[in-house]
Length: 440
Ligand code: AMP
Ligand code: MG
Image (cartoon, rainbow, N blue to C red; front, side):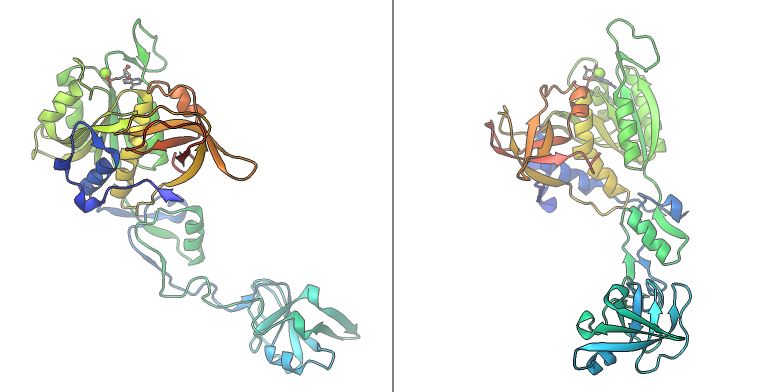
């Protein structure tokens, strides 16, 4: 499995590239150089900690498990007895008592004796081995009971879980920067913790621009379209578990845009806009960003998603005034908005949230159809990937690759990632795919 070829961070200097058409890997590296992880943290109850980012290392206050215990339902005994097996290799042990999970056997276990033990019960003193009940023959004569089993059915230390085997007291159970998963929540519970220190949530303000936009629920006037990007962005942000601040739709008017951008910078760590970053006559986002902030680059050598503004804006109206926020001016075309979000914005938001970045895996697949591709830009085509009968991945591009056709994103289950330098592909050629599952 490979990961998306990333540009070496230290070498990522903008001056090497055309800021109107930056290679994707360079843009990713430059964006990450601008990111500072959040400083603030808060304590949250364990049940609310899923997908939050650990602010500090969690040190285990106890051994887990807290005592040696049985991994099976069976009989616990001292493995020294194995050496005393009879000529036929069999061993007979009398049953001295019972141990249940939560109810230890506290008596002595004499030589030649064993303890009936259930899974999870503490190992009785002097016992280090458990023979599973399926491997023994039980003899009940009057009051006394014994077991008989082959010495080959067991070995010293078998079926015993050691104290501290899962986590040792004083050891690091989970590291700062960990995005908490279901298993982590359980692991923290196994340490007896009720709360955990996590990073505060990243605040991300977003709005869409365009005189043509109408909100779902409104009548659609002539020449207008419904604003889908704000819904896509809101949903993608929700998946990232950030605090999303929806600032609505803004008309293509420089003053209205400036006011909303300033408001966004005042209230959020990151600002996302959709539309208006191209070079059309109503593309005022672009001109306003030049006044309110310092833009680092304007476009990517990427398809879909060529226009993309990245930099900072200031709540005070010009660089250095008031509060800065990181700014991503995303293209208006709905698929371009999504691709830019996943490839450029998402890694930045994850790093800013304080999480340790996890590269998204790429899976090699055979492409089932020819693909037209121009060298000199990275393309993210929509595809449907599946495993064939031999277990090999194959991928079929969805028909239209138009950057406006949101239906193809819904139809697809992966991006076909076509590297910057690659050119046209024939059917049967090898490509890399990035599965949506886990990413979106
Ligand atoms: P722009 O980047 O503003 O030039 O927009 C490019 C294309 O995307 C145009 O066809 C717009 O109508 C469309 N578009 C812009 N914003 C949105 C939005 N919020 N929802 C759906 N389509 C949009
Ligand atoms: Mg527009």
